[in-house]
Length: 226
Image (cartoon, rainbow, N blue to C red; front, side):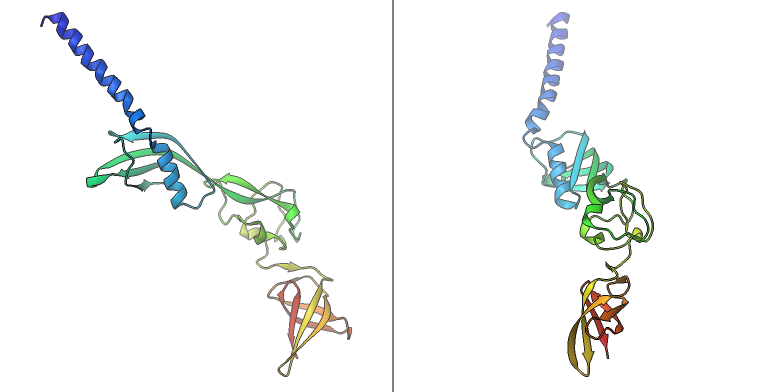
């Protein structure tokens, strides 16, 4: 084999290797590491939406899907995962992971003491890394409660912004549950002041027109002992 033939043969081998290397993703494409990571994260973490980008594989990625995936670092941000195969073969995979979850936000500015209704709030998806601590994710958690301080529009509502229990407005029609000598007596009443569930509140007995003080056991019932 002369020198020119050796060069051509070496070039052929090099080109052949490049073709083989380029074909590997196609062989592994039946399962795709990005989709595998996304499925793993959705199955093991509670976020509403997950985005996996810029997947980088350290070493050679087998054609078949891994038996399991473990989180080594993360799983949010610049995360690192172990793709575990038979005979304890491990391939390290890195990826940029972003998670979004729903958070309750204010539609408009509201003053301290405002009682929140469903028309005052909306649910928006937000990067969990930018979500404030104690953010509220369920609209029912804040509906019917009053604000402890004034808030601006379009901001996440956090637990410290609202009263701990539901508020009942002054003049609300309620059932008075009167316990007297082992008997339960009910009467129609109205609250005389704003009250909170679980706390004492003043109300008026509409039959006797007398003012009483009882515990607001729910939004519609005031209980008192005689």
